[in-house]
Image (cartoon, rainbow, N blue to C red; front, side):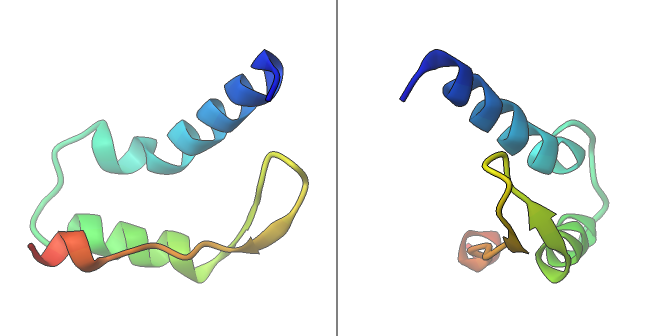
Length: 61
């Protein structure tokens, strides 16, 4: 994997999670945001467009 692709993937991932990790959220707000992200199609950095599959299990721990 070349450096440009690695940077693109890192920027894409951060763009997805920034709203969740950069501010203090009220109880239930993180779960609601993640459900919202999962409910819409996302265009990945390789041009593929599909729904996200998020693992919500750690939220219940």
